Length: 628
Ligand SMILES: [Ca+2]
Ligand SMILES: [Ca+2]
Image (cartoon, rainbow, N blue to C red):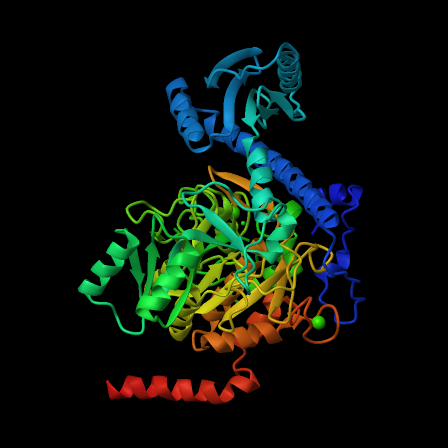
């Protein structure tokens, strides 16, 4: 694998150097130094700022690579089209690829313009206009000489653009395109939230309170750094589990006392909202009058960010997805490609993505997505209005070896999108719990949760237990505050907790840590799918978690006999140990290794420690067959 291009930039920025040894799983390599002590706020802010810039830069580079591929394909497909066919083709393309702002087709033999498509050209200041015109004329000159052309980024008004020019292979035709780079702003905004560089999203319908997660004492959150010490909940809401199910009369009394019509129920647990009482008042009311089993604040959770199974490509270790070789350092780093020789997954082993939804029309995800569910608005499809869930889903299941975009970790496992976080990238305990239960009831074998809060909510824990009891492997991100404070759901014993490594195989500077961490997976500048048929590089433990969810999916594909706890044990034991020898709080058991894990899962003899369960299970299965 060639050295990723964006890494050069990383080195220049002094963020780190690439250890090329990271591709070699030797056990005697010198382990990197790490400093995982909490950073001072300004140091943390500086690190995150650099990381954000790095993600924007990587996104810029991979966007350009994707754009060039589009132009080459376009020239091949359109060379023999009539004008009306060309018009239809471009219309469809621009409909689904909004970042392709304008296209100009040239007839190189005559030097004339064949057709121009697209919106009105963007308007900018006189200087901006001159710069754009200059790029355009350079592009025209280059394609006339049968050379390709790429401009640097330039602003026009509030947006950024770049110009590409590409001649056809025979040089007779050419296309010049203006690409919008809105995705760069989106990534920047996205990463400010995902990396908690801002205190907390101010959007949303409800008033939000910040408290210390243990004492529930009020605290003020001024900077992103303060997030590590705070939990957030809706001020006028309370979560109640009664000792005895309230009857209709009880509910009428409660609603009248609270002066509300709002009571939502999930399982045994209710969420009440009051217009005139805050959490403390609600708490004392229920304690006094109803003596419930438990009461807690209604917490918010924030993002932590037609195939055939006939295996005719067993030899593929370097897939042809155009961004793979240059940007997807993360897949070879955990031996994913080697692992594909053992298993590429199975469509019946479903991995649920409980997140902001997924762009269901993305060309690199189409056919891999099941119908899913939108908890925020059950009448709508689980569409992604943030970008986070689409990115997470692509890490698990972007279509592999289709000459397009990125490769996911699994070729065949289907992804089940469950939208629990709204357009601000946050959601309630109720929504997250409902999403988990829905996924558990709709065939998920693995659930990925790239989201969290520092408060331990029994309501959420109940939902987790519900899924866990149904033999589901639950995977969660630990959080992006470089803190030892346990985040939930990651820190629940039923959940497999994932922290992030960088390309040097060090703990990523932002990644949370602690004794509850199970494993590490790549989390820094991970290239994946992004809404509106785009691609982006993002960083966070949110990006690490889906690597492990995909691994659990691959393990369950090749060995469906393993129970959820056996899958978790297997993933803990098939790692590359990092940091201090053995399990440690900065690296958990170590970084996942797909090849080792799949080898262990597929070996005829189940790992020794699983033998008793394995034999019992095999016998049970045989008994079932014959007693029918
Ligand atoms: Ca692909
Ligand atoms: Ca270790």
